Length: 341
Image 1 (cartoon, one colour):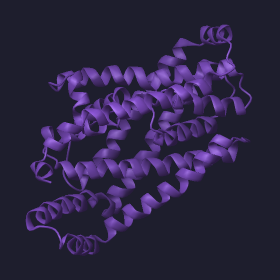
Image 2 (tube, rainbow, N blue to C red):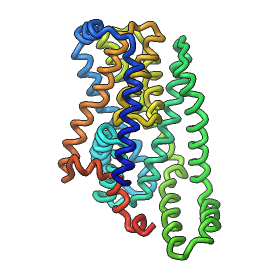
Image 3 (cartoon, rainbow, N blue to C red):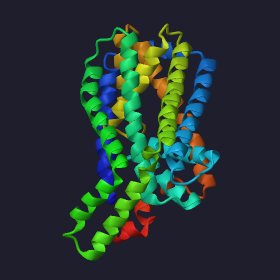
Image 4 (cartoon, one colour):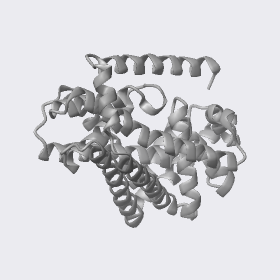
């Protein structure tokens, strides 16, 4: 990725985040916000932070199920890489953390680059379907009229349904996919066609977990468990503010916030996260100052501690801050077939 494209991504994301922050904080009285922040219960925030760490660790279990059809990687090692990946996504645009964990998986455990990249794409598709489920389940128990949520569902529901269907079809029919690839590559020069065919085989191998009922079930169940635990962290932050809201609201918030991650904002979805949370809570009757304070602290709980832990683990891997920004370039250089392409 060129330096100009990185700058463009950062500029667009920054403007997007700034716009959403302005929308989220419009009409807010600063003194009321400070009063709401002052009343928060710190022990509940600490518990919420610990619960969030558990949620992230369980995501590594999902990754282990998806990798299990290819190779065995110790869960403890995957937990460390997931922490590093979250940190990278939190501080650098274009989900550089995903590239970073793929690179480290290749370096530390010899997993082919394209295979693990395919698995990351599968993870994102499963996550989208889980988030949609959480939103729909939350809405079953909550009387909420929100144009923002309705607009989000109108875009994301067909998108992730189509992506999940495509992934299952590709996984179920590898021979058909090979024939399609073979026909597509015929007009290409022999060397380029060979490289493209090798990459296609790596992608097909990455779908192996979806062809195994046990691995697929494990990945789906662990996905619901991990995001359900994260919803628990959101609910615990509600307890810190003494909000009388049930777990269904937490499910709705987690689903809506993560679906909003499709919006190209700054790293960590600053602004977008706050706008979504404040919109939902105020629609449920929570005062603006309390909703804003909640949105800020909930975001801190899921952003700051995991970022610090992930960076500490990155240093132990022999890498530093500059390597996060170079993650996409490192990803391209990690596999000689990609260089040849």
